[in-house]
Image 1 (tube, each protein chain N blue to C red):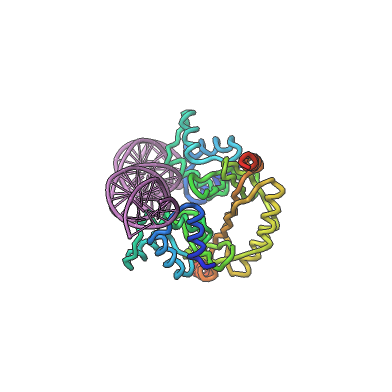
Image 2: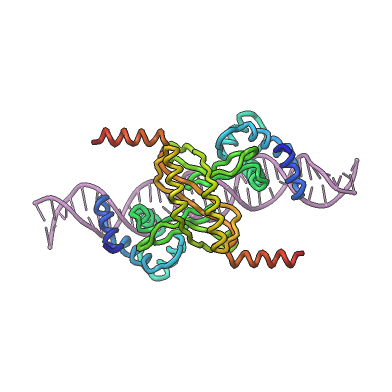
Length: 151
Length: 151
DNA sequence: GTCCATAATGAGACTCAGTCTCAATAAGAC
DNA sequence: GTCTTATTGAGACTGAGTCTCATTATGGAC
């Protein structure tokens, strides 16, 4: 079952309608690789003359997240980032506080420990957010250089 | 070295001043247990006639976070939560999406795995945010009840 | 203690990301 | 084709936090 079909089933189940805008947005998102934000997407859509207002973009993104086709990455500040989850499985993110680069990581072991903690505390997990912040390999080198020069 | 002294050292090192407002805010925060948000704090201060404007509260909170005396918990949406870190060590949070309750957890093992992942990816970690969202023990029961009734 | 450069304050304007309103439009069930 | 009702777009609105700027106050030098 492909993404388009998963989305229409999701919509049908929730008595929602498959509009031209929704179809167009999903179609376009499937072309994108990596992370993106809502307003960047709006610019992209406008520049190609694709139909979609800001409101519809935000609304559709929320639907796609709910349908499990897109994942929303809440940032510490500034705009949320999104990524298409079709054909991929869960992972978390390291965010470079210097250049904004997002590096993915996954750890079965951490997931397992998390589940275990929830069990112990009687918590029914519906989701989690695990972000590591710091300097990515590139920026770390730059920072080291800067330090070295200062000495 | 107590909190007040740690704060004045931090201020001195950064050529900042220990004002009446800053002293008052720290003093008041040390009385609070648990989590709080900036605007709740403002209400609290106003109701007691303590000096501190919204701007100063936000500014001082940022200083205290920087000084390591307070920890800021960025929420998925809505106001950030804060907690005083004096005499406590690092932990992460489970947040109940139903009642907003915040339950703390800590796992040496997860921290270790995190460090290991950073090492492997060449990432210099400066901080992290690990939040588990779901239903706390109380709310889970309520949800179960609701489900049971519906059947 | 006095002086004084400059950090800090408060009131309110502003920003930014996202949400809501509402009249017009269009899915899609029948 | 009809009709109910979800959806759309433009722009107003919101909430949390930040910034501005005139006024005040800290704290190092003397």
